[in-house]
Length: 229
Image 1 (tube, helix red, strand yellow):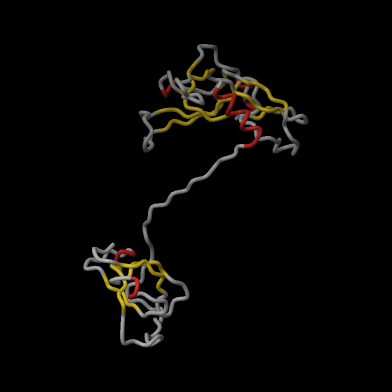
Image 2 (cartoon, helix red, strand yellow; image 1 turned 30 degrees about the horizontal axis):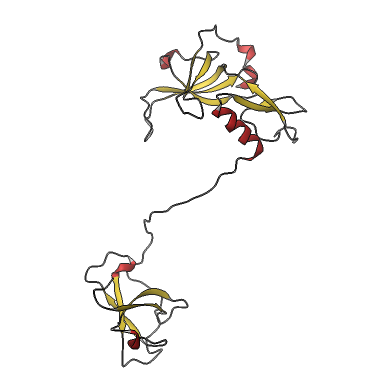
Protein backbone atom coordinates (compact mmCIF):
# COMPACT_ATOMS: atom_id res chain seq x y z
CA UNK A 1 0.00 0.00 0.00
CA UNK A 2 2.98 2.35 0.40
CA UNK A 3 5.91 3.16 -1.84
CA UNK A 4 8.26 3.18 1.17
CA UNK A 5 9.09 0.54 3.81
CA UNK A 6 6.14 -0.33 6.03
CA UNK A 7 4.98 -2.94 8.52
CA UNK A 8 1.76 -4.89 8.86
CA UNK A 9 0.48 -4.28 12.39
CA UNK A 10 -2.51 -4.97 14.57
CA UNK A 11 -3.81 -1.69 15.97
CA UNK A 12 -6.35 -1.41 18.76
CA UNK A 13 -7.90 2.01 18.51
CA UNK A 14 -8.64 3.87 21.72
CA UNK A 15 -12.05 2.81 22.97
CA UNK A 16 -12.12 -0.41 20.91
CA UNK A 17 -12.01 -3.95 22.28
CA UNK A 18 -10.48 -5.57 19.20
CA UNK A 19 -7.67 -4.73 16.82
CA UNK A 20 -7.62 -4.13 13.07
CA UNK A 21 -4.91 -5.14 10.63
CA UNK A 22 -3.40 -2.30 8.62
CA UNK A 23 -0.13 -0.82 7.35
CA UNK A 24 2.20 1.23 9.53
CA UNK A 25 4.56 3.72 7.89
CA UNK A 26 7.87 2.70 9.48
CA UNK A 27 11.42 2.93 8.07
CA UNK A 28 12.47 -0.46 9.45
CA UNK A 29 12.01 -3.14 12.13
CA UNK A 30 13.71 -1.06 14.82
CA UNK A 31 11.02 1.60 14.47
CA UNK A 32 8.20 -0.77 15.43
CA UNK A 33 7.44 -2.13 18.88
CA UNK A 34 4.50 -3.57 20.75
CA UNK A 35 2.69 -0.89 22.71
CA UNK A 36 3.81 2.04 20.56
CA UNK A 37 1.25 4.79 19.98
CA UNK A 38 0.07 5.37 16.42
CA UNK A 39 -2.48 7.52 14.65
CA UNK A 40 -4.45 7.38 11.42
CA UNK A 41 -3.16 8.97 8.25
CA UNK A 42 -6.22 9.59 6.12
CA UNK A 43 -6.25 9.13 2.33
CA UNK A 44 -6.48 12.24 0.20
CA UNK A 45 -9.74 10.98 -1.32
CA UNK A 46 -12.17 8.95 0.78
CA UNK A 47 -14.99 6.71 -0.44
CA UNK A 48 -16.32 5.11 2.74
CA UNK A 49 -14.09 2.00 2.64
CA UNK A 50 -11.20 0.73 4.75
CA UNK A 51 -8.87 2.28 2.17
CA UNK A 52 -9.92 5.68 3.55
CA UNK A 53 -7.18 4.93 6.09
CA UNK A 54 -4.05 5.29 3.99
CA UNK A 55 -1.96 3.85 6.82
CA UNK A 56 -1.04 4.38 10.45
CA UNK A 57 1.96 6.45 11.48
CA UNK A 58 3.91 6.69 14.74
CA UNK A 59 2.46 9.21 17.16
CA UNK A 60 4.85 10.62 19.74
CA UNK A 61 4.09 12.83 22.69
CA UNK A 62 0.68 11.38 23.58
CA UNK A 63 0.23 9.24 26.63
CA UNK A 64 -1.66 5.95 26.50
CA UNK A 65 -5.34 6.46 27.18
CA UNK A 66 -5.22 10.23 26.67
CA UNK A 67 -7.80 10.06 23.85
CA UNK A 68 -11.37 10.73 24.91
CA UNK A 69 -13.73 7.77 24.21
CA UNK A 70 -16.32 8.31 21.49
CA UNK A 71 -19.87 8.82 22.77
CA UNK A 72 -21.34 6.72 19.97
CA UNK A 73 -23.32 9.59 18.43
CA UNK A 74 -22.63 10.34 14.75
CA UNK A 75 -23.81 13.38 12.81
CA UNK A 76 -24.17 11.29 9.62
CA UNK A 77 -24.67 7.66 10.69
CA UNK A 78 -24.25 4.82 8.21
CA UNK A 79 -27.59 3.02 7.90
CA UNK A 80 -26.65 0.48 5.26
CA UNK A 81 -23.98 -0.69 2.87
CA UNK A 82 -23.94 -2.49 -0.48
CA UNK A 83 -21.38 -5.29 -0.71
CA UNK A 84 -20.82 -8.28 -2.95
CA UNK A 85 -21.39 -11.65 -1.32
CA UNK A 86 -20.49 -15.18 -2.31
CA UNK A 87 -21.98 -18.40 -1.00
CA UNK A 88 -20.45 -21.77 -1.79
CA UNK A 89 -22.38 -24.84 -0.71
CA UNK A 90 -22.65 -28.52 -1.42
CA UNK A 91 -26.18 -29.84 -1.95
CA UNK A 92 -26.81 -33.39 -0.84
CA UNK A 93 -30.16 -34.45 -2.31
CA UNK A 94 -30.41 -37.73 -0.41
CA UNK A 95 -31.11 -41.27 -1.53
CA UNK A 96 -34.47 -40.72 -3.25
CA UNK A 97 -33.63 -37.60 -5.22
CA UNK A 98 -30.18 -38.93 -6.12
CA UNK A 99 -31.88 -41.84 -7.90
CA UNK A 100 -34.31 -39.41 -9.53
CA UNK A 101 -31.52 -37.13 -10.80
CA UNK A 102 -29.42 -40.04 -12.04
CA UNK A 103 -32.40 -41.43 -13.93
CA UNK A 104 -33.00 -38.05 -15.58
CA UNK A 105 -29.45 -38.19 -16.95
CA UNK A 106 -30.59 -41.37 -18.75
CA UNK A 107 -33.77 -39.60 -19.95
CA UNK A 108 -35.97 -41.59 -17.60
CA UNK A 109 -38.29 -40.30 -14.88
CA UNK A 110 -38.35 -42.36 -11.70
CA UNK A 111 -40.60 -41.90 -8.68
CA UNK A 112 -41.24 -43.86 -5.51
CA UNK A 113 -44.48 -45.54 -4.38
CA UNK A 114 -45.83 -45.31 -0.84
CA UNK A 115 -46.35 -48.84 0.53
CA UNK A 116 -49.44 -47.66 2.41
CA UNK A 117 -51.49 -45.35 0.16
CA UNK A 118 -49.71 -46.48 -3.05
CA UNK A 119 -49.32 -42.93 -4.36
CA UNK A 120 -46.28 -42.53 -6.64
CA UNK A 121 -44.32 -39.38 -5.81
CA UNK A 122 -42.42 -37.65 -8.61
CA UNK A 123 -39.94 -36.26 -7.76
CA UNK A 124 -39.57 -38.73 -4.90
CA UNK A 125 -39.23 -37.38 -1.37
CA UNK A 126 -37.96 -40.47 0.42
CA UNK A 127 -41.12 -40.66 2.52
CA UNK A 128 -44.85 -40.24 2.06
CA UNK A 129 -45.91 -36.91 3.61
CA UNK A 130 -49.45 -38.26 4.11
CA UNK A 131 -48.72 -41.65 5.66
CA UNK A 132 -45.35 -40.81 7.20
CA UNK A 133 -43.67 -44.00 5.99
CA UNK A 134 -40.53 -44.47 3.91
CA UNK A 135 -40.88 -44.97 0.16
CA UNK A 136 -38.41 -47.42 -1.31
CA UNK A 137 -40.32 -49.00 -4.23
CA UNK A 138 -39.04 -47.20 -7.34
CA UNK A 139 -41.43 -46.77 -10.24
CA UNK A 140 -40.61 -45.46 -13.70
CA UNK A 141 -43.35 -43.14 -14.95
CA UNK A 142 -44.13 -41.38 -18.22
CA UNK A 143 -42.54 -40.34 -20.39
CA UNK A 144 -45.84 -38.90 -21.64
CA UNK A 145 -48.28 -37.10 -19.41
CA UNK A 146 -51.34 -34.87 -19.20
CA UNK A 147 -51.60 -31.13 -18.63
CA UNK A 148 -53.75 -30.63 -15.54
CA UNK A 149 -53.54 -26.87 -14.99
CA UNK A 150 -51.41 -24.16 -16.58
CA UNK A 151 -50.64 -20.46 -16.67
CA UNK A 152 -49.65 -18.13 -19.51
CA UNK A 153 -46.50 -16.13 -18.73
CA UNK A 154 -46.39 -12.63 -20.20
CA UNK A 155 -43.38 -11.22 -18.33
CA UNK A 156 -39.93 -12.03 -19.68
CA UNK A 157 -37.59 -13.34 -17.01
CA UNK A 158 -34.04 -12.04 -16.76
CA UNK A 159 -31.42 -14.25 -18.44
CA UNK A 160 -34.12 -16.58 -19.80
CA UNK A 161 -33.96 -16.91 -23.59
CA UNK A 162 -37.67 -17.67 -24.07
CA UNK A 163 -39.99 -15.32 -25.88
CA UNK A 164 -43.24 -14.38 -24.18
CA UNK A 165 -45.97 -15.35 -23.97
CA UNK A 166 -45.25 -18.97 -23.08
CA UNK A 167 -47.02 -21.58 -20.99
CA UNK A 168 -45.91 -23.18 -17.74
CA UNK A 169 -48.01 -26.13 -16.66
CA UNK A 170 -48.62 -28.85 -14.13
CA UNK A 171 -48.05 -32.15 -15.92
CA UNK A 172 -49.20 -35.50 -14.52
CA UNK A 173 -46.88 -38.07 -16.03
CA UNK A 174 -48.48 -41.43 -16.76
CA UNK A 175 -48.31 -43.52 -13.60
CA UNK A 176 -47.45 -40.62 -11.26
CA UNK A 177 -49.55 -39.75 -8.23
CA UNK A 178 -49.01 -36.00 -8.48
CA UNK A 179 -48.13 -33.43 -11.13
CA UNK A 180 -44.78 -31.78 -11.74
CA UNK A 181 -43.90 -28.45 -13.35
CA UNK A 182 -42.86 -28.05 -16.97
CA UNK A 183 -42.88 -25.60 -19.86
CA UNK A 184 -45.11 -26.35 -22.85
CA UNK A 185 -43.69 -25.81 -26.34
CA UNK A 186 -44.39 -26.83 -29.91
CA UNK A 187 -47.89 -25.37 -29.80
CA UNK A 188 -49.29 -21.81 -29.75
CA UNK A 189 -49.80 -20.63 -26.18
CA UNK A 190 -53.52 -20.06 -26.74
CA UNK A 191 -54.02 -23.68 -27.78
CA UNK A 192 -52.72 -25.20 -24.56
CA UNK A 193 -55.57 -26.69 -22.55
CA UNK A 194 -56.36 -28.96 -19.63
CA UNK A 195 -56.18 -32.61 -20.67
CA UNK A 196 -53.61 -31.97 -23.42
CA UNK A 197 -51.36 -34.99 -23.85
CA UNK A 198 -47.66 -34.07 -23.92
CA UNK A 199 -44.22 -35.69 -24.02
CA UNK A 200 -40.76 -34.47 -22.96
CA UNK A 201 -38.27 -32.84 -25.33
CA UNK A 202 -34.63 -33.32 -24.36
CA UNK A 203 -31.69 -31.22 -25.50
CA UNK A 204 -28.21 -32.57 -26.18
CA UNK A 205 -26.42 -32.94 -22.86
CA UNK A 206 -29.48 -31.81 -20.89
CA UNK A 207 -30.08 -33.48 -17.55
CA UNK A 208 -33.81 -32.77 -17.58
CA UNK A 209 -36.47 -32.11 -20.23
CA UNK A 210 -36.19 -28.70 -21.87
CA UNK A 211 -39.96 -28.57 -22.38
CA UNK A 212 -42.98 -30.72 -23.18
CA UNK A 213 -44.77 -30.85 -26.55
CA UNK A 214 -48.09 -32.35 -27.71
CA UNK A 215 -48.04 -36.05 -28.50
CA UNK A 216 -50.89 -35.84 -31.02
CA UNK A 217 -53.06 -38.14 -28.92
CA UNK A 218 -56.66 -37.25 -28.08
CA UNK A 219 -57.06 -35.17 -24.93
CA UNK A 220 -57.36 -37.09 -21.69
CA UNK A 221 -60.76 -37.33 -20.09
CA UNK A 222 -61.22 -34.99 -17.12
CA UNK A 223 -61.96 -37.89 -14.78
CA UNK A 224 -58.51 -39.30 -15.56
CA UNK A 225 -56.67 -36.36 -13.98
CA UNK A 226 -59.17 -34.50 -11.78
CA UNK A 227 -57.55 -35.86 -8.61
CA UNK A 228 -54.17 -34.44 -9.71
CA UNK A 229 -55.18 -30.77 -10.09
